Structures are given as structure tokens and as C-alpha cells.
Image (cartoon, rainbow, N blue to C red; front, side, top):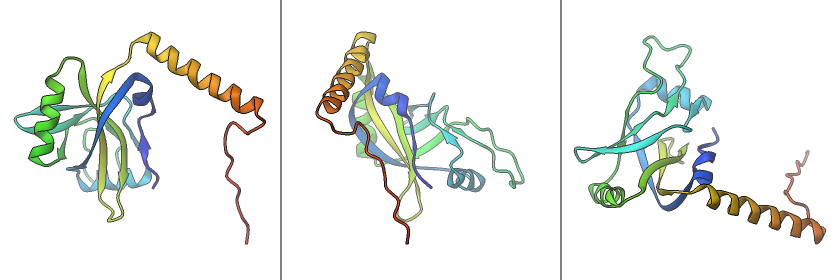
Length: 156
């Protein structure tokens, strides 16, 4: 399974710090994640009573599961107390929030969620970033270099 990314997060926020957290999931949710049927688009993290939860993350119901779980339920994240304190202090600063950036399985087969400590971008900052990317693209074209690298498949 390839990782599920929240591409809008990098466009809408400045990402200052990232954390890796485990997720408390039910069995059918893990199977559904392995199929790649999840969405991080409208999700965010909250800290309640010294615990971190992800809210609004969509995991599609698994077809062969017996019981149906809510698709957008609040899921607990597994972090160290030290990391939670650091996140709590950061979130209490004005304008900071915790946004899920990507969801993946590590080499041991455990589901992990990458969380970013983010500050929102203003509309003109987004425009500046887009203009900067356009200028880079034009410069690469002028130099005769391809704008996007293409993967070549080798047949054996």
C-alpha cells in the first residue's frame, strides 16, 4: 500500500514540525486502510485530557466486515507524553493547529499517521508560492530540462 497524503495541507498551511503517531484502529479499519480507501482532506487533531485524537479522517467501510463502524469517527493517536506536551504548548500559541499530513504502514506493518504542527497561510502567500513554482518551471523549460521526471520501466 502506498501512503495516503493530504496534499491540500501543504498548500493551505506552513508546516513547522512533524510528528509520527500510531493510531488505535479496529480490525476492519486496518483492512480497509491496506486497500488504500481513506481520506485525510478535512481532518484535524485535537488534544483532550492529555490525549490526542484525529477528527474527521475518513476510512471507508470494509466490504466483508460483520459490523459497520462510523466512517468519520474520532480516533485516538498513540504518542509519548513528552510529544503531547510539546504539541499542546504549540497549539496554545495563536494560529497553530495540528493537521494530519500522511497515513502509511511502516516496515513492521503498523499504521502510522504523520502530523504537522501548522500555521495557516493567507491568500496572498498561496499566490506567491504558486508564482514561485511557475517561475522555476519556466526556468527549467528555458534550460531545456524536463519539468517532471518520468519513470522508465525496465522489462526483463
